[in-house]
Amino acid sequence: MITIKKTKTGRVLRDAVEELSDVDLSVCFQCKKCSSGCPVAKLVTTRPSEIMRLLHLGAGDELLSKDLIWTCASCETCSTRCPMGIDVAAVMDALRRLALERGAPKPEGNVPLFNRAFLKTVEAFGRSYEIGLITAYKLGTGKLMNDTEKFPAMLKKGKIALLPPRGADRKTVKRVFNKSKAGTGAKA
Ligand code: SF4
Ligand code: SF4
Image 1 (cartoon, rainbow, N blue to C red):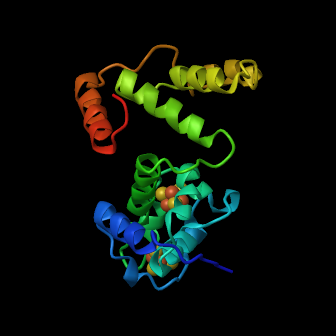
Image 2: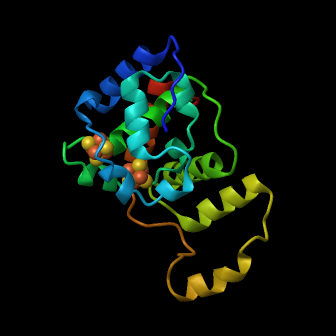
Image 3: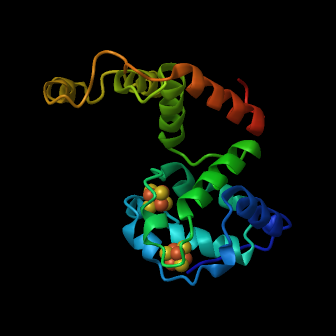
């Protein structure tokens, strides 16, 4: 069951999400195809179709603390499956951006830390770099030795590269990050 509290920020949040994502939330007819294909739906308390419904009904900024916002893998399965052509993944992006802008409390757990570590490595190397990501994440958790036994097998199977990626356009990626930080008011 979906419950929403009547808040002053409801309409404002819906407008902001529609503007940022270029999505018309009113065309969602709750078929739930987005949720049934979402790879993280079983791990979260609020699924994509529920987020869509809550937004449409006028939920306020409390929505910005939902775990899906930070668990979403941006795989875009939801957007591909939606029979109304709604870009649900863009709605998740918009909610993440608004959560940062408005300083919404983040859910417990290490998902926000993982997100930060991932973005830091992309910003630094121009592409995803697993060793950099793992190092930043482990330093953040303080559990440096967790899962280290898997490392040799992953290395052997070529799942992890020791050296940073070559050929990345670091300057352009850096510019994108700086522009994004200027837009959200985050520190460059
Ligand atoms: S798939 Fe599209 S129409 Fe169906 S619930 Fe999700 S967003 Fe709404
Ligand atoms: S983009 Fe996010 S919300 Fe959509 S299916 Fe992928 S993980 Fe789920």
